[in-house]
Image (cartoon, chains in turn blue, red):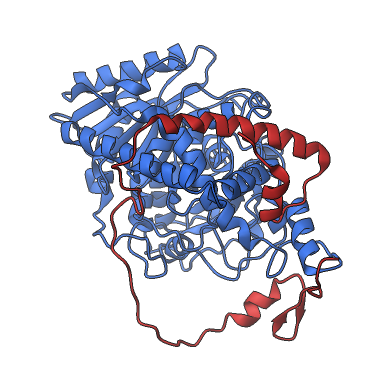
Length: 477
Length: 94
């Protein structure tokens, strides 16, 4: 058994660790990371010497010392937090994000920081300043992004579970590409305090796990109001594990017609249609719904999210933290620091965001974008009057080749076409594996729910997962 | 769409290398022409989204609380002078 400790689900790892110790699990993962990380580059940093295990064993705390890995845009006190950017290289966070505090209080060992697209700007984890991440299912392909390191680490059994962040699909799309479970909770469900901001009206911390049950266990720990994040919601937190019932009878599941159109890979379409059939067989009611403004979602996102990003990244100026490029005066220092510190995609988004907010263009772009965002939210409100959940592919294709979309930013942005609307509306969604392509690449499907109805997401996702047993399939490494 | 990259880069406090300027300009023009499609929608009667969940303003008491963060924050600054962040001299551009 001890040889397979890295394969444990979070649930099983807690069981074992609570009886004995999490130390053997930590040791096994460390060995595995040493072997695999040079090939996959999922971790930017992991230092087993610095792992704090709560003592004494057996641990009475819910996570029992089990290691959880963290995307490198979430602050951990006393450790480097870089957002995979040169502008923050070497930066040590002076405080813990609320989610880190919660994980520590629940007895988790904070284990390793995961690679990502620089400042979470990307859909392939190729914009990291510290090297690309590779997909464990095919090392010539991307793991998705921006939480590609978190997803690849969990898929390759280098992590038991990981945290990611999702602004336009950054948890769900990599989960889909790597064949694991990715949850983006409702906007405000989890505190963003200590998450380095990208698009503040979209950003949400969530988990990447091996199973739906693990996702529910982690949300129990992460969810809740936080006075340090005024956008966090003051809604009661249920015990999400109670929602894990293998029963979808009577559930109304809508298939949004606009998500099954051209550009969708036929194998992906077939796999998601088959999943709908499975739900039907298990007693759910499948119906067609319409989200008529879907085609505008990417355009809205690339106005509003980049506007927020350009504003949020204004703080990186070489004065208070991170990189400073010495220059003859303050002004030159700003320009040089930002030129040398930011990568191409960060610059692209800062420029675009600055433009859409600039005098004379604000109304035509930013304000227009926020109005169309209202139309997209109203689409969802109407659809959720007819259905309890919406089902669609997480991404239009399985994992694409490294380099394939790097020269064409628009093509890259369109790979998030099915995940972005969820962030525009602030609703929760989960991506779970629903099949494999003929070349053995994972296919993910996305379930979306009404605000704060993560329980129904878990119920349906759990039912499908137990029926399909796809979580048992592992990449050959 | 006339996209004045020099002006925008100036507003964004970004120096750009000549070779990247060309590429970024082309990319941004493509993205802006893609988002042009929004102008086909009539939004004259639509309220812009200000918050996805219609949360009301959140207030807290304006109280002074002791905080020990200064030394921690200064520890990671590129350059400090005592209890201050130190920056180059602020001079007028010639």
